[in-house]
Image (cartoon, rainbow, N blue to C red):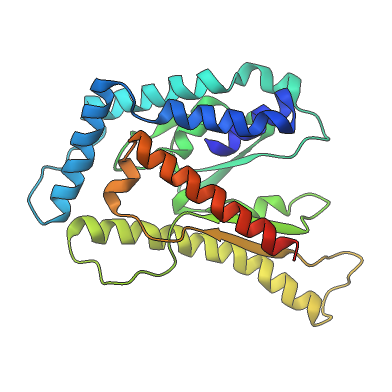
Length: 271
């Protein structure tokens, strides 16, 4: 969501429009209305209660009206910030590429969507975490979050020339944790983190292997180039409940942390 909002703002208004577009998106996503805040507090509280070991019912998102309502609200939010019908007319070859990944649930294969092919349905599919939202049907198939296949679709970035000189990876799942997860909620949360990171590290290992072969002289440098990998990681791990928390104060805390880590990346990149 952040990527497509920033990309659309860049196409429509230039670099100066990007920061304001992202601030506007996250202000819109935050739970600010009284009823919305009440629902947010109830949902976060329920996850925290489950984390203590207290038995709570599991409801399929296909049977939960709140899951479909949340997915529809997400659609309306995205469409307020991105006019997908205008993207084909705004995009040209001098613009940066945007690639969004999903997984075909029934076919078991990764699918990527590039530039003009990205629609609101594509983004909803990419956000369709199976425990939270129903799959999104596109091209006759059900699609989930691409977490379970290529996360993110780094391999796709190397399909065309020129190859990227650098990769900046925003890694939202921590690589390591301090304690063994024991509650069912903690176990499920860590399992999803590991699934995402395994996929991410496999994608990065492909790039690192090519870099090693170039450095060892096994590949011609006129055809292959070294790609620097830089990771942006959170300074601390948040609880499973935080992933559903849309309190404005918490969103602002995350944004402030993102600004800090972004400055660290830029300082490191230009040292």
